[in-house]
Length: 122
Image: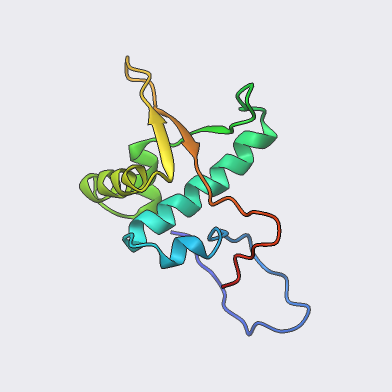
């Protein structure tokens, strides 16, 4: 396990890499905290996928994130990681397409659309 040195957060303090929790709509949804953190991890991975060109002809960004990765990143059991994926699917926040033959599922994220003039700061 990596050791960290803690110091006060001051003006000019260098900020370490952080995980962006996507828009506020996610916080207000009836999801477990594990599902919310998993969505944040998937959102982060989608940015990497976009940079690497994993984009469908329609513009949809595709990503790969295995159950084992989720289990490891969440520090949870396989059952809890599976349940978090299922919550995200039930709430239409992700679409998983199985590839078979032991290959990881392809995942596409859904995100709340904002219409012109609307605000997510409510």
